[in-house]
Image (cartoon, rainbow, N blue to C red; front, side, top):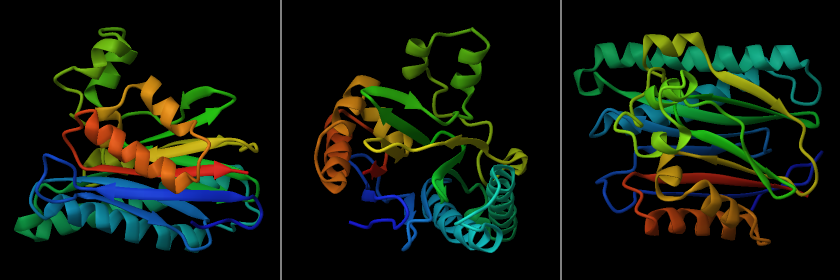
Length: 251
């Protein structure tokens, strides 16, 4: 378990292949100094999805380290830096997909949490998510770039119908697509002691309702135990995907 100097952060993390897939196309990255945490969910079959998510968790950190002053930087600049890092990774993934026939259709989602001073900056592309549990209230901080989410926003289907909709895994923006160049959905969050943040792939939400997810996140345990429980619960809940999460506790 790692901790952060300025704020007391504790981290738990786990990624598994799950019951239905041959290989794990998810990747995660926890910075040694806890300046940023990343979860990515690759797609494209065979080794392509694995390669795409691996590129995302390698390329984005390099750019973030180049662009951000993690002790003191303006909010506007951090949002710009996250988008620049995302667009850079998107371009590289697309380029490699063009030149290597095995990687032709590869892509990946990404969700990241960046710690600058005493603020969290959260960004995502695709349908990997970040949740905040504060004072017993679970809030989704990210926005899915999926067809079902677009239908919900248009008022065509309800949030409940979206859960089992046949287009729920169809993304209109991800890294490795030309729409990926439009950058990330980003928000700022001011952490408070007692907060729990969860970064996860759709393998987690595939197997757990919001209520179940909230109950696991609320466990008063070491975040590693919470992460392990989250993954196991999603697997037992029937998740048909790779399952990955990072749990952050603010003390």
